Image (tube, rainbow, N blue to C red; front, side, top):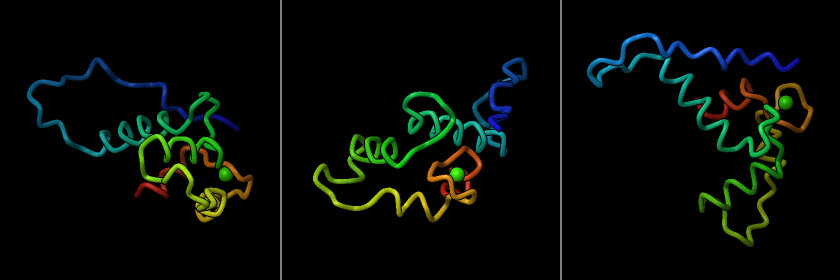
Length: 93
Ligand SMILES: [Ca+2]
């Protein structure tokens, strides 16, 4: 159930110049953002991890009572209480 396929970066392709903005960057950015939230690298973002990172980023106040579960629930297509990278993508875009 955890086939992300995100591990296959084609580093061999050229990066001459710095105008390589196509939508592969979008996926890369997504993967990078996902890693930030996926603290233990299990490929899923729990509300606990989400909350820790948002607080770390200063998005959420330390003593905020906002329920991250509710926020995750909005994007949790498969209703398992966790965000995988595809669900995370819908949150980001
Ligand atoms: Ca889910």
